[in-house]
Image (cartoon, rainbow, N blue to C red; front, side):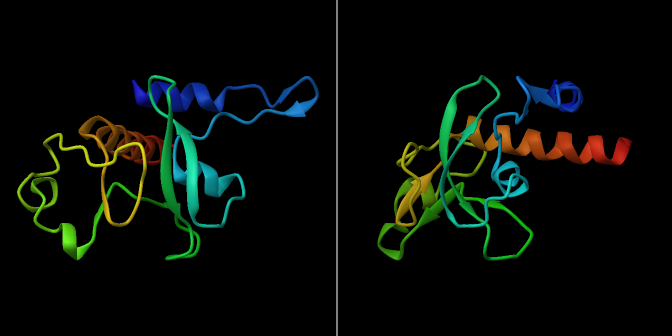
Length: 127
């Protein structure tokens, strides 16, 4: 299904009303490709069309885009979501407000990024 989206994405019009068409960003990588280079909070659109706020890092590795999916400070290291819950389990922590002290995205959102990455890799290898 995501492979089909990528193929459809390639067929979108080049212009709308004389202005270049730009599909909604679905990842930090999309933001990087559209010229964003400053770390910060950005909106992306998930597979259902809903807007998500994510933290994107464009500066750690020039030319790369990282999306924060989980982070915790030393004082929060013993919270179950960080200490004893695997990434395949849902354990939300401040899901709507990415931050460095205590944050973990939902399993569904992490799954969206995982599927998007693997679909893109498959599409690139197919070409």
